Length: 276
Length: 318
Image 1 (cartoon, each protein chain N blue to C red):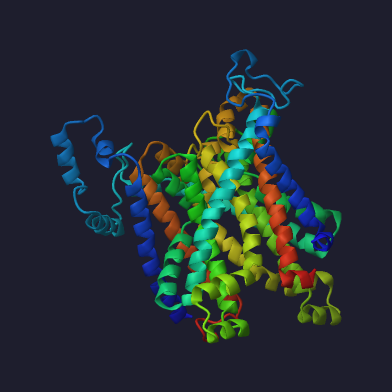
Image 2: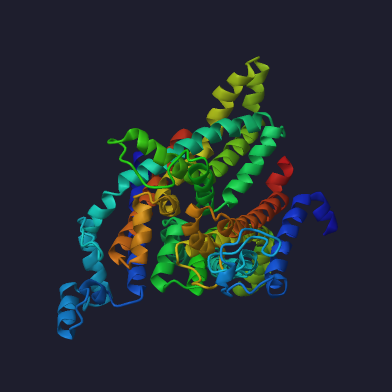
């Protein structure tokens, strides 16, 4: 493991960034200096200072505390929605790739139909249909992620299904479910891990966008996207600090998962490894 | 080639039907009784039942779907609940603004990606390359609504170079139109610029290792000719695919940018309609964006096969 990381230092950098984010999210109640939803109008619209590092908003709420608590929502949405996409998409891809035939045909046409929608439009349409709540945003982002995993998994299954060890397993009568779970899945995990990491970055960005459009968590819950939308009205008065904190939060979170995903892809994809 | 296009068109039909079913079902999942939305202040049960019957909402869902699809293919996508304007008319009159913004962003993105991506590949590991690589990672990680606010803060409210939002007609006031266009176009272009730049760079680096490039250099051709005539031409094939898909996703990209800059295009109409629960408009925009995405994907596939003769059309070589 340490040899692997020494050979791929970018994974270490990406991993440290992601760990830092997770740490901030888990310890939010301990490290946030103020209650993120507590209104104190006597402290309204204060610029950054030693008491409020990122200033306060028009209701006197501490921006840094809201940014720290906002990381919980973003990471929760990222992890849960990607889990939904991963579990549904990989299961469908395994079944379609292994079973083939009519199941494959029907499943892939349904996936084609989902892929026909631009990702963000589909997420917006699903969230608007289900109602503007954070749980619905998670479902929407998860559904949007399904086609990518299905296609990726199916392609991987097709490339390994005729390998000798699988032919041997079938010949000795290993049941199909066991073949898929014990012999195929463990051999196709590398690209799935890379995709999952990159999908979390997309999910965080999508959640922020949905929240910015009023389709995510509702006030006064601290979320980065909604806080930027809320701060927009104060921009004309040059109260820039209300937007900068949540904006940098989104940037750091998306950047960290993108960076880690890219590093993992470079390390785990044998073609890229050869050309490096 | 003709048979390939025909086959792809035929394959698009079932997918388009599935897309229409998804859009129809999504709208019917939406919270609230649609009759109450159509009825405005009317709450008399008899009148509401009358309206339900009038709009066919008392029919089973499959019947409603067939009726909706029948009207949709004839261009009748209903009326906006907020303005009572025919939906298609409301959407079509927003198309020019969105197209203008999308194409301006694409122009910025493609021209800069070609220039910087090529220089970055030619001068690999130079300070410019490192800067460009950093930008590509940062560009895709920056939410465009935040970038938009930062640009407004600096260039509109700070140095007052461009207006913070709004629109001026392209043909009536071209100079003013251009001033309003600059910031939204840069905002919309940033993410795709990062993707395109990375693609141009990696594609060129890949092409530089090919035998025909070595041969071209061995013949004594100058570096610029090798790059422009031999490498770039071949390296651009995957880039064309990505750019093509970005054309198809113009509406998607415009949703947030138009909202930030109050740009009166389809994206802003979509957001306003979601807020106002104007489902027929939302339904139409989602449907049109999916269909335009599908059509662009088809065009890209055909173009890809045409640009790269090694790609076969369904098992037959071209």
